[in-house]
Amino acid sequence: MTTTDQALPHYPFSTRGDRLADELRGTCPVTRVTTNAGHEAWLVTGYPEARRVLREERFRRSRVADEGSPVQDVPVFAPELLDAMAYLGRAGLLEEARRLLSDLPDLPEEELRAEARRGLEEMVAQGAPGDLQHHFAERVAGPAMCRVMGLPIGDLPRLRHWADTDLTMLLPTEEVHRNWEQLRDHLLERAQRCDPGVPGLVPRLTAMNTGSDALTPHQLANVLGVVFVAGYEDLASFLGGAAFHLARMPGALAQIRTDPGAVEGHVEELLRYSVLMGNALARICTDGTELGGRRLRTGDLVLVSTDAANYDPATFPAPDAYDPSRRPNPHMRFGHGPHYCPGARLTRRVGALALTELARLEGLRLAVPPQDVEWHPDRMAIMPAAVPVLW
Ligand code: HEM
Image (cartoon, rainbow, N blue to C red; front, side, top):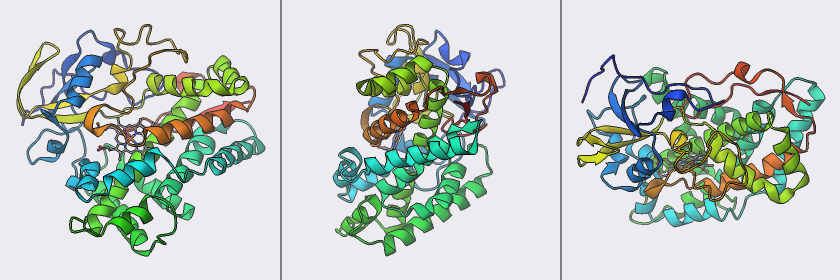
C-alpha cells in the first residue's frame, strides 16, 4: 500500500453538483491523487482511458475489497456488495434480475406519474418557495424503487435513512457497518415473509433462489440491499440534479412541455451534463500497464471519474453547452463494460415520465442564485440538500 503524499491533490475535489470541478478538466487524462482514506490513487478523467479501465479485465473491481489494498473511503463489508451481479449469476438469478430491471414488466408508470404530480401539487399548495429535491426527486425515486423491488411503500422512511447513511463517505466505519446490518436484516425479513405473487425483485428472486447453487439468505439480502441503495440514491440524485439544471433553463422546460417526443433527448443530455459522482468508480490494477502516458503498477488503485469523461472535449464538442440534440451522445453515466449499470433503462423511463410532469409547472425557476443551492457535503452520489424554486 502506498501512503499519503501531502503534495498530491485530494480527490474528491468538490461535492457540489452545479458544475464540473476545474481540477477534473485537466489536460492530463491520468493523474496522481490522494483519497479520503489517505491512500494514493490514479485518477482517470479522459474518455478513452476511462473506457479502457472499465472494460479491461486487468482492472478489477472485486479486488478493491482485498486486505491491504488502497481504498477510496469506507471499507467494503461483504464481497457480494462489490460483485452483486456476479453472485446473482452464480446462483442462476442474473437473467431474471436483468429482465425485471430492463423489460420492467411491472413498472407502474401511471402510478409513478401520479406520484410526481401529487408531490408537485402539494409543493404548490404549501406555497413558494418549494423544494424539488423533497417534493419531486425523492418523491418519485422512493416509490419507483419500492415497486421495482416489490417492497411496501411504508418501508420507505427506514429504507431512505439506511440508503442515505450507506452512501455517506466520511462517517465512522462502525456506524456505516451497523447501518448496513439493519438494512440487510430488514430485507432478510421481508424476503422470508414476502408474498411470491407480488411483482418485484425481492419476491421473485427469493422464490427462484432454490437450486444447489442458491445464495445464502444473508447473501441474497446483501445483493438486494445493493440494488435498492444504488437505485434509490442514484435516481434521487439524478432527478434532483436534473431539476436544478432545468429550473435554470426555461427554454428546455418549454420544449419538454410542448413537444412530448423531446424528453428523451433531454434525459440523455442531463445524464451526460449532470455532475453526480461524490466518489469515483474504483478498480485495482492487477497487471501493470501504461495508461494515458503513465506507468501503472500491479496493486495500484485506479479511480475513474465518468463525470470528467462526460466532459472530454475530444468526444463531446463544447462539453459545457447543454444540447439535447447532441448525437451521438455516448456518455458514460452508467459506466461501461462488465459492470454496466443494470438500472439504466429504469432510470431513463422514470426520468422521462418524471421530467414530463415537472415541465407542466409553468414559470418554474430557482428561488436563489445557483451558487447558493446547498449540496450534501460528503455523499458518494452528489445530491442537492434542497432545490428551492418559485413558479
Ligand atoms: C441516474 C441513475 C443511475 C446512475 C448514474 C447509475 C450509475 C451506475 C454506474 C456508473 C455503475 C457501474 C459501477 C462500476 O462500474 O463500478 C452502476 C452499477 C450498478 N447500478 Fe446503477 N446507476 C443508476 C441507477 C440505477 C438503478 C435505478 C438501479 C437499480 C434499480 C441501479 C443498480 C445498479 C447495480 C446493482 C449496479 C452494479 C452492477 C454490477 O456490479 O455489475 N442503478 N450504476
